[in-house]
Image 1 (cartoon, rainbow, N blue to C red):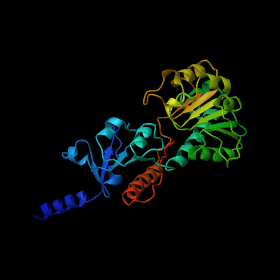
Image 2: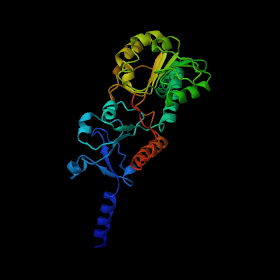
Image 3: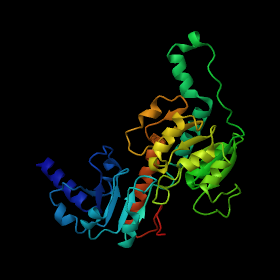
Image 4: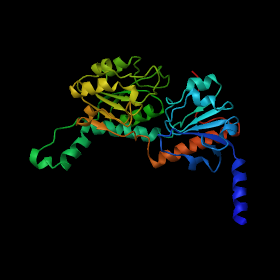
Length: 327
């Protein structure tokens, strides 16, 4: 009898919590339920009362990069906010949300430090050939082949950063400590930034030894790094991508790398993840990573705080932490 009463009390308590739609792609196995279920009542598509509850739900959480389109929004006529759990929002139809008067947030700066660290790690790895040297030693080639080929110095490199937001600024700060010369490209020149600004990505590439790509993926930035930019970067140039895979035309990049038309690449993201172009896998001047720049226990805790605080702020009618404003 006591157990039945406890279950009824738990159900009543859960139903009194703010209702939040849990939007997660079936192919994406990461769950954030444990982040939310103590403070919110979660609504999933398979909920027995979905058809009724979906009419009144005001908040939606997007788990990771799960695509959110107008088709899903149509099922939630009372929706007022979309809370993203990742830094990028290219998987969310933000324009459609804003057209409908729906607020949108992202993970803010939760992942910025770790992504910046990872970008610098990829850059060092490519220039100094750390991963390739590791494979050389593990394969037993050191005794047989002798000295391993020299890598390239990090200090003094001209590094062009594409997207000088939170992540880009942290990358710049870290690379300044190495003695790198920082320049940048962004949608517009930043008034309080002292680094030289290039309005054209081609011009930035022509004046850089390394391009670090960390801007948002939009219609305008899709395949921003193409054969023209790679040609401007030159035979010794290096590309680092910790943004989104489709920022780079992978076919052009693979062709330039295979033909030795650029010096190397460090890639954490790809156009058709988890698929990676086969041509890249056999190249020692390319470092490949399975979209893990954001992933540390610390960054996940930080993202949890941003998501839950955005939801709590919304239901309390307080300012949001990381709102994406309409352009």
